[in-house]
Amino acid sequence: MGQLLLPLFPVDSKMITPTLGVREVDGTVYYLHSGMPIFSHLSGDLNMFRYITSNLILQGLCSNQDIVDTFHVSTDSVARWKKRLLEQGEKSFFKEEARHGRSHKLLPEVLDRIQGKLDAGKSNYSIAKQEGISEGSIRYAIKLGRLKKRQVHL
Image: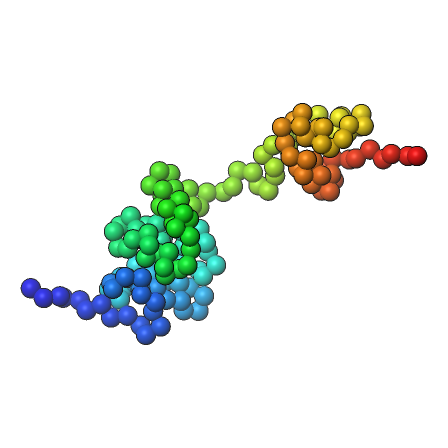
């Protein structure tokens, strides 16, 4: 029996494999299998891109190298995304970040402890060594106003 569906793709499609293509129309990226759309996402949505490309690999529609060659991303990144989908599932690509823009080491009790040391006149470097954080973290917290550096008067 011959082929029932010819893989026809729009002219502006970029081919990932002979039966899998991708094209962008009006800010939306479409993934086409044998000419039929199977996935889509907004062109700036990196998490959805990572999820879809990992999914295509796991479904056996393309290889890691096909994604690397087509989208010019690193081999390590593609392997990491695929592993993440396998081990943690699709929700791992779309979950809210738990930190909400806050440092995971500079929690309120740590900030209080560091502020006490700054008030005692200790240097950023010595405090960072004691607390097991980088000196840059302390400088950044000072810059944001979360910590106050004691003024030295001569």
